[in-house]
Length: 319
Image (tube, rainbow, N blue to C red; front, top):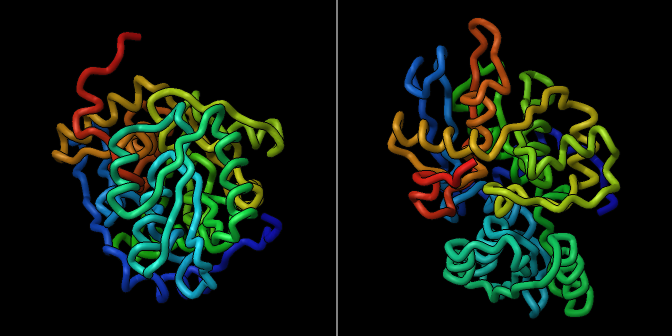
């Protein structure tokens, strides 16, 4: 992953032109003051309603469309959402796909999604980093097209198209909150807004790759755990997302797993919508009070995924 060129708005616009025929243009929802227990309104981008249940389809399509895909097809490593995106994109475009998934964080609902979209799923032992190594080794030995979940220019550029849509629908935001795993989504979102609004990174204490990267440097290996690990469990922040974060992200907050459960419950009570823990993590940045907007600050949240049991938040574990 050597290309550290930050995508431009033109790059993201070009990606949108390529992938939009294969996407669902996800809706936006204006949630009124008080409805989420917050003294201000919130604009939501419902990316969890994407065809595969998350934004990851965008980057997957942008990697595969126009690529020289060999007989071995496309290969990815994923906790689920990226794998589902690669599986759908590859199948839609007529290619085979294989996804390596760390057994330690695998969720049955996500395994079913990947297989349902056409992927062969390989469960791996050990850590998330070990899974990434197995995926990379297979890509090299087989010649399959490697579709990295967060640390390539095509992936980040594809993810940035979610911000393109969000701005078109809600052009007057001051701030948007984004959940972070490996950094592909927030990298693309930040590249699109390019300093024109504040982008707030939200992580749990148990999936805190961006926070650790900014304090310790990018060369560490995390052991993600907790409720959000299956969607935000990157072993580290990618080199390109790290470059973007250092250049453009100055606000990042951490929330507890308990805050994630509470955010999901508030989302359901207010809107009758459910998302997966990664989506609730972004909202928890507000509902927990970790990020406190200024008076009259116009705030948006991107709900990044919905591939989880619909009632996962109903009975949170005892503290």
